Length: 288
Image (cartoon, rainbow, N blue to C red; front, side, top):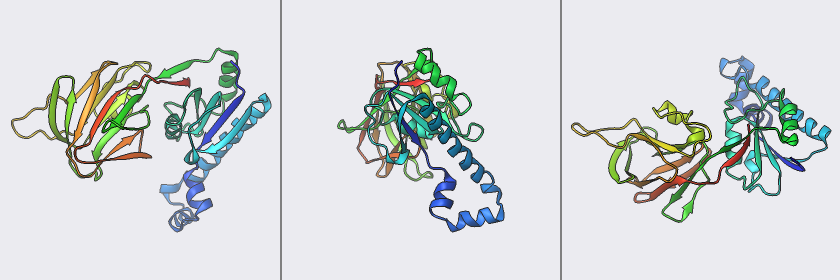
């Protein structure tokens, strides 16, 4: 496989943001006190930057053209043969929202600290994985995603890990009407998780969902902490759905949000908004 041009996407560490850039007074105090809450901050930052430099050096030695960008400055990714993320799953997921075609490789910059389910590469095995990719022997894993539409005209980023619908106040009740297949049900809960197969090992599983095969086109929903009034039992508490199935959610809240693949992308939901979720049929092709 010919890799001519690569985009490297990296995150800025907490240490870089709060100490190097802002010299945040609370952070500086915690460092001075050697507080437990910040005990690994400096070393984590150092290892993160070392991984970034290691990847850049490997590509230079292989004669591969590349560009480097902070994940916060990302725009739709076009005209690259490969995007490489340096960080953890958060950086991988945010990059996936803007990747229109090509391959995505996740490099976990601090494997013993950062969650890296999607990041199967690290500094020590990068050369072997990248060489295998160029030789055509690397494992390429399709990761199926979900399409979320609000009020039939607003299309949100494709969901790779999970989507959460909830009240914007974490202590508030999430109220909605859920429709799955021929069943429609008004519910109260602390939120509703929906995830494709790649995200089935994350929050959905913690909430009681099933782990699906990584390449499956199925998806599922799980009602989080349902409130069932005395004498009433919900039918729709969680289910694995087929590729062609669809979920509809009518918001009964004035202040709610959709959270796509973590906390960084949110979309406000009004009372009466209709949210539709289905298989996107546009998988990410990940270097596994």
